[in-house]
Length: 442
Image (tube, rainbow, N blue to C red; front, top):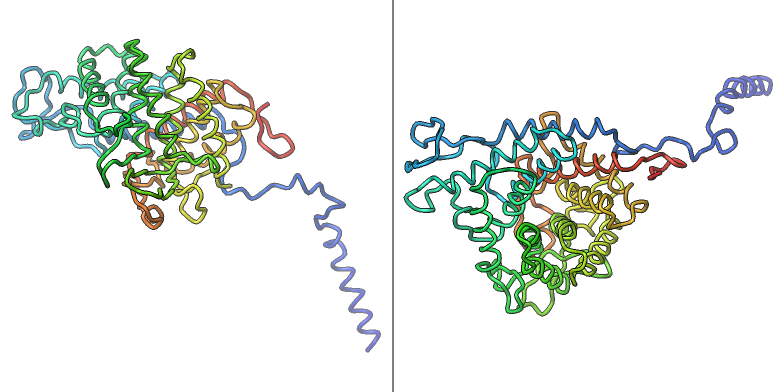
């Protein structure tokens, strides 16, 4: 019996000996070189890969958004808008051409054209912005409410005016020669400067959901338009107002310890609940970048805006998930990962690096990881997945945790175009390498 046991033991050791020697261990393998099991592509994307994502989004949007007006009864194309008095409508499409989300999309198409050199991106914006401007100039509805662009003719909120105004000015500055745009731009600027409700100190505000409420979103719905107006007209009053908004929003809503903005602030509250909603923080950081681009460096508010951008970016990167995304509530890792905010941060950080506002060595890997994450949410049809739908304001976490996501949430498309275009510019400006297994700027 002992002989049999000894024989079995020897046979077993002989059989497993090669296996034991083939195992990876600290002696036979440099363990730090093992390939991690990343759930998001890691490393620097190629320029070709980024361009393919931009093209897929363009092709989807060009196919699924209106580019002409129709007679509402016959559904025939309106070929000449001059003196048309009947009811007209946009041709059927998946997204509204006059929403603030589409102002971001027009800007994204313009930037994509600038970076890639492809005219079809800017033509997308020129065609639709020109259509809006021409309807505003020539179509005479029975009353404004009957117009397919009623919110353009008679804006009732910053959502109606700021994003489109900024995009229209950018189109003009890029060479779009449509004289009808000027009247629309002036109408929007007049609304922002003179008609939108403000607190007594001049801070742009709303009376919903409660009286005297600040929405962080409204920084983007106002300041980039004011900044572009200052750039377009040379009138410093627009720059002064833009800087004032940044300053007064920041004093009330920025948590210096976290480096994040709360979503909403209500004047009547003695305590201000802090919910750090991702997309609103995206609107804020993008506002800071876009203001700095046109704000004269000798303006007294320039350093304030630059320092606030740096403080905000520093706070944001502390909350980036290992997947490259950011969470719906930035400081709540059990809230879902959200695409539109991640795309906005990608654009804003990459743009700030390309413009020299922030440390390129410190932040470039964050931007590329974020883009790699975003690119996984652009499906084969060019739809952007994982975007939170339009969101009001609340003072409890459940509201934010359970907001739906949808491919028809228009908020995702412009940010993805902006992000891809700016990452492409980043890849043209700088070289990247894997250094000791980590992505770094050379």
